[in-house]
Image (cartoon, rainbow, N blue to C red; front, side, top):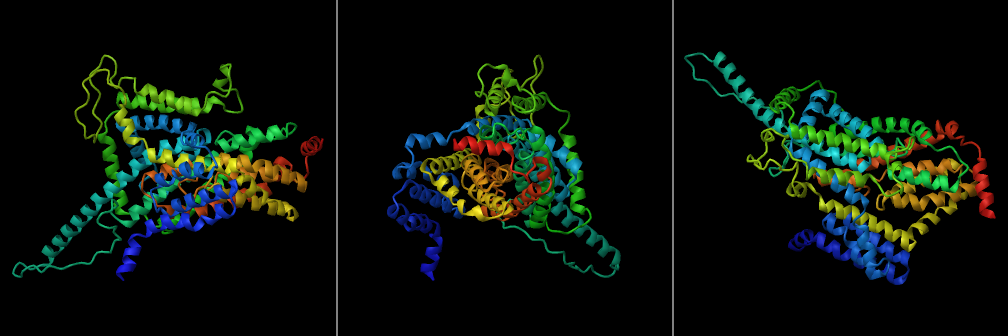
Length: 576
């Protein structure tokens, strides 16, 4: 028994050692770039799934295994760990630091709870609707990074009122019992203590930060709903996510005579998909974490709403730093939306050189300005100290900025940066080694299947691969293969390309599936097992809804029943 206990305690160390050794014959027997890359991919994936080592440390595995196996040079791997999205995240974190420092997130959170109510199901739906709308115009990563601090404030407020309510309820019960006993007891008889059993509540462990298990479930449900809603919102517009733009670019380059993909047609096709997915995902998360009970508003929820209203009143009138932060939030949103809207020329068209400015440019610029703009209104006294701020003594310097480097450093999730970088490194290795092409070629035996079956298998394969590889890299590899496959089968290429483009965004089962997953995971409310369980259902919902769309309203919209002339012209040109 002692040996078993020792082995169990050392299970993570054993797994870290055994997995690489057991898979080592793969690159030794088949010393090809594809086999070596597959070895690194499997080892890293097992480390991530099993959490045998910290996620950030596991993300560093490609940094030393790729150079050792000759897949990528060390300098090439290092470049993958700092991408444009890293700068985008840094700029957004600057804004998030200002939001949290001046309690703007608390004001927004309390107002949102007051509107939606403290009932968990409606609160989750409210957050999902807001996130979907923002993600239509902003990147999924930016939307998640902005909404999560607000959601976290709501969760902390509900948890804190939950603890107070539990104590208040117990005091009320005792007082009620004492009153009843005093009324029932005769003056000549001593009062007898009567214990009334209370309904049992599932409590978390003593070291847990959640008062009850239901509180923990609410935190899981709301956290996961935000990353799923960001993914759903990104599907709606052609500029909603990078994979949509990659599809539009590659499709227009391959089929220049096809004038069928634009902002309008994409919106008409994808908007019903997003609405159906939003509702089904909300129902799935409600069933998974909150249950199917339809209870009336509980006393605790009414007390929570009352206390939240009181907390909102305590915030007082909006302060100057909150106004500045809110203006920056709106300005960043508008600049992101108007950069390249797609249906009209954006502000980047004012510059002579194209392609130099991205969302990260706007994010870093505004984040940098927050280090310069004074937090004190010109010709006024010091700004009001944020409520609940432990550092009661503010900087007497009248030119003290909105945020300091320490404020930024306290919020910057460097582990998430490394985690996302590890995903990009894996994707780069798959592309350079030819492993992605090898996987794609396994689709060739599908030539004897009907079109809907080809589309379904392509969607399932793409959604599985994108769990471990970055979405843009996966789509970049699969689009040419699916285009060639569609031309070979003489079916409309849009029949496979559009569903694959949408399904490549459904990497929602692991923190490394996409940056929004990693951001939500960093808040610590969910475990990988929670993401896998909930993400599997969302993935399945997404694939089924996309298949429904391409087989119904997508047919007349894109004329999918006929093999188009622009695809025939492509075949003729290719044969020449």
